[in-house]
Image (cartoon, helix red, strand yellow):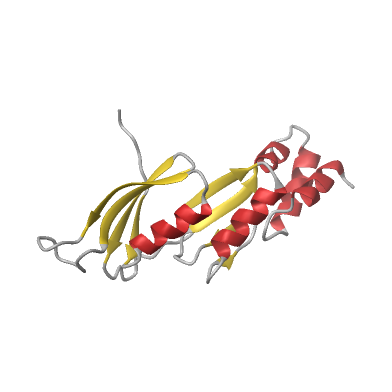
Length: 160
C-alpha cells in the first residue's frame, strides 16, 4: 500500500525534536531509529534518521547538517483538530513553549520552526454553516484571535 509520510529535516536536533513531540502528544511512539556510526559520516551515536507516530500520523526525521535557506515556514503546517478549549490551551502552551511563537488565527511556530494550527473541530462546522451571516461573524471573530477561543466563536455565531 502506498503511503505519504511527512519527512522533517532538523539541523542537528532530530533526537531532541523527537523527544519534544513525544512529550507533547500522548498518543505517540517512536519507530525505527538509525544512528550515525563508524561507517556513516556524522556525529557517532546521534540519530541520523528516525520514525515517530503522533496521534496516528507517521513522520520521518532527518538529523541533517546546516540547511541554509531551507527553513521550515508556514507554507506547510500541521493542523491539530481538538474538541475542547482545554485541548486548545494545552497544545497551544506546549507547542509554543521555549522559544515558540504564537501567530494569528490559531497558528503558531514551535521552537524548531514547524508551523502548527490548533483549532477546535467546531470552528470548521461554524465557518461552513449555510447561514452565511453566522459563518461570516465566526470568521471575523477568528481573524481577531491568536489562540482560538471557543466561547467567543460560539458567541459570534449566536450573535451574543
